[in-house]
Image 1 (cartoon, rainbow, N blue to C red):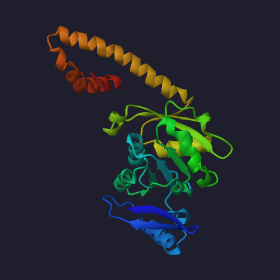
Image 2 (image 1 turned 180 degrees about the vertical axis):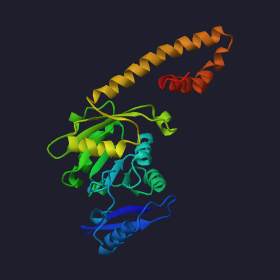
Image 3 (image 1 turned 90 degrees about the vertical axis):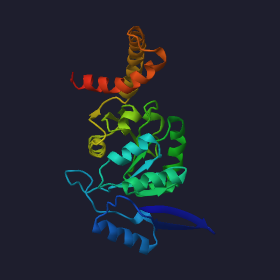
Image 4 (image 1 turned 60 degrees about the vertical axis):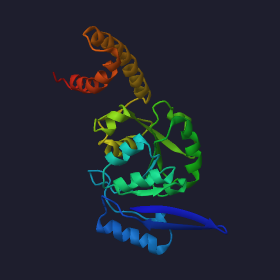
Length: 269
């Protein structure tokens, strides 16, 4: 894994790539040669391009993306976006970004300037932080870069401006279930056909990808929360009536409920 570091001394920007061990190296000989050239040139990671096609169709596009954040959603994106895609994980504390980058064979940084050269920048941060993050990365975005809002409860229109082109990719699914391997549903909005195809190729590993109003994701979350809250209350009552001590009912629901619901969702008995 390569860890991205920037320092500024006497007004001079210095970029350094530090190689650290990674458990799952995912780098072709062409990628290694390109990385070596970038380091040797001392021009920084923004000059690095790993020539691996991004999509199955072999589209010749910049395959370098950034994921800002190092929490559960960032981990899901990093792990499920195709391994042929170069990933820059930007997060604080830096140790969290390093841990995630190490797991996916990516680059770690705690500096927003690491978005330079990235074709797509995923915002995997809490909704209240997103606007500030966009303001911080704006000066460093490459021309044509696509910023992707993943916050279900944040309107993408609130992030876009003349200097930032933003699309939405909202995931329907509980982070804990997704982290354990469940597939969610991704709703893409505010993207033109080419951008939608690009995002669909990147996010197919997360689950089925559909195009539609981004508000579908928030409505789905609300519907699931309301219906399942009512079901939980009824289930709690029935288990107590069946003779199960009330203090252990939550544990029984937590252990059996998700599996039963998942089986019902796919039509299993």
